[in-house]
Length: 244
Length: 244
DNA sequence: CGCCGAATTGACACGGTTCAATTGAGGTGG
DNA sequence: CCACCTCAATTGAACCGTGTCAATTCGGCG
Image 1 (cartoon, rainbow over the protein chains, first blue to last red):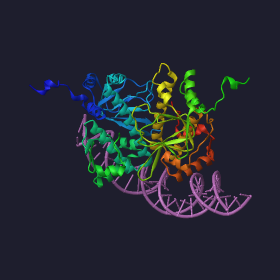
Image 2: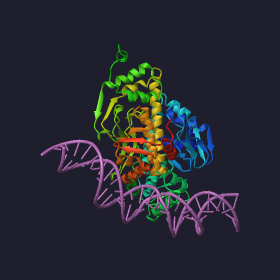
Image 3: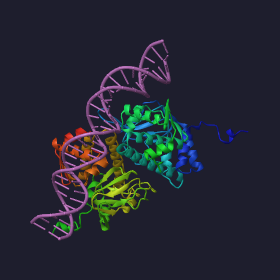
Image 4: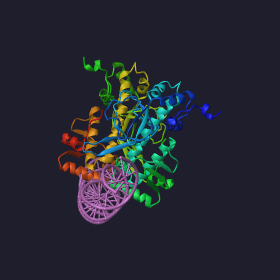
């Protein structure tokens, strides 16, 4: 009688993951089913929790299905550098190499829900049976690497103004891929301190740059939501190129 | 009559590679032979040449056997960011992922000799037969990634003074691995402009920091050779940790 | 209503950049 | 062997982007 019967009722928890995956490769029905089955045992952790400690042996790979996290490293004197943001559809401890110790800590920025993704990594060991998942892991790794290089350029050769614009565009694109943003607006559950530590700036300066971007009618930002008022100009300002 | 007969006369071209590899895993005799055989067809390019263009489809993987190169990206306005230095024993286009487009250009800093390393990558596809080479590729990738994160921390959260100290220590360790440096002295065939572009600083400032390090009797640096006069202090200053 | 962390603001200090010369060193040709 | 050329290194001075310190205000929540 209803489409609910055709497509069994279930929480759409895997939607961001599936959307993100769909941008990386086409999945066969059996692969989609495999991903949907991950929803079974979700695990949850609160804001501030450490999903993975730096130097720890990497545990079974997980996928974020809701919430935000960061990968970061702390210097002995308390300075912090954030390497990347993790949003739904991103992996935690997903390294393809065998033995690896975690090169950075992973910290939840909000409440985060993850699912065990061991079966995906396992499936990708058999590219014939799971071409889509195989390709997704490869491409996702490639994109992660590209974004890390983007980050190096940002930190090394861009001004504070350019850095902020560039990061906002990156986050937008990533959230769009997960179906969590449109072209102009998206949630940003990060304090200015977090942004500062990601962009190699002080909190005070981040604050001033955001003011400037608001004054110039390039963005709006209240209560954890961003609106990009002029994405094209931001793109030009920051020399942004979509990854991949 | 001489040990030359036991170990056939051949140019020691693969020595840096073999030494570097030996720090990553123990190689079986057949694996060593496989590496030595690479010496067959060397290829050479002059300083300034582009070993690999950004965005180009990656060509067969190569290993540097002599000379230095950098991985870099250029911004449209001419700013440059160098991601990493490549020294003997390092790979060019060695990505484990299949399709990958080069994420950065690779440029020779000096005259560079490379050898085709396709057979190594091929060998690593059969971990049973070539456990050492397999492990080496994995570990080398892991270390590259760790060094890239180090670089992010340097750029984002260290002062110019710390950055220079940190980079010098990294280069020392890498050259030591290849048998091209001792604990205190090594060649540095890079102009101050190159150092500046690697560390996100201006040439003028790099110059001043080097002066300062010399004044403080921490380093010597003439005609492309560095002497670390107080490696321990440099290590403390820059919070340096050897990779891996 | 009151609390607390986050955001905001001003004043000031400083690290790092820019511009513009000048010096130095290696390489070439006469 | 010297004159010359060029590129890298060096230096000084002024400027400015960003950091630091210290309040103050705002906003969400119990």
